[in-house]
Amino acid sequence: MTNGTLNVETLTAIDVHVHVEQDAHGHFSLDQELMDASAKYFKAGEDRAPKLEVIAERYRSLNMAAVVFTVDATTATGHAAISSEEIAQEAQAFADVLIPFGSVDPHDGKGALDKARHLVQDCGVRGFKFHPSLQAFRPNASEYYSLYEVLEDLAVPVIFHTGQTGIGANLPGGRGIKLALSDPLLLDEVAADFPGLSMVLAHAGMPWYENALAMATHKSNVFIDLSGWSPKYLPAPLVRAVGSYMSHKVLFGSDFPVLTPERWLRDFEGLEIPDEARTRILKDNARGVLGL
Ligand SMILES: [Zn+2]
Image 1 (cartoon, rainbow, N blue to C red):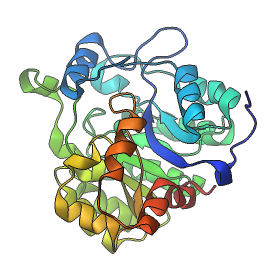
Image 2: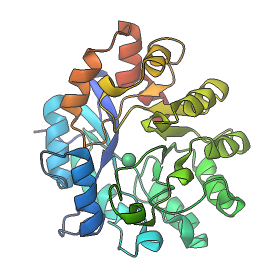
Image 3: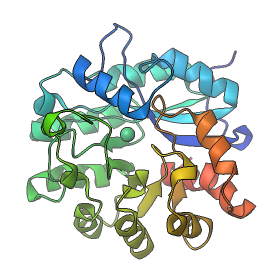
């Protein structure tokens, strides 16, 4: 068993979208109602919340690296977040396979800026994850611009959840979670105003993938990940774009634990796209975005 450094050359793929849903102390990322609702929505057949070492061992056995993160939605949900600092610390023991991203609560004001700096400069965090619907913030609002400034300065990529979410699914009012906050087009302004900030639109903005494609085509700092949907359910125009003119802007992500990387890869094999595009999507594009 090795726990040295990441050897990108020998990895078969980099999964840029993996959630840590339970910390070492048995605390969960979401309250029970939201956790159960999303497990049902995704028909998660296995453990909905494996701990970090379980995630690491799985990816190690697949010879793949995983970008791991939680989402700090403390203000929006009233449920205390899993510590991104702890995730980063624990990930050091699995540095050959885990790439830790951080999360800050956008409602924390200056606290979020300080925390973002601390996570990158002192804890080895390599990027950030935001979920505008779950964190209940309108990502193009000017009050978050100082946060984007800090992230651009830190020169780390940012993954934004975009599109449909399983969190709150089938609950009255979706438990108050607003899908419109995750319209990818809201982020077009952010991408225009922060050209030095690499942004990944998670889930290709599904079902608003046309907006996501337009942005990734137009702006060199905008990328797409294909997580959260089995590739076989992706619409044909998106698959055509992914296999051709967009193949340098698309990243492999599973959304584990709600979708396993094994299932994602199996269904990805079934898509009719050229081999050069596959290699880019599975590893090369992520390598570029993550600066590996
Ligand atoms: Zn996600």
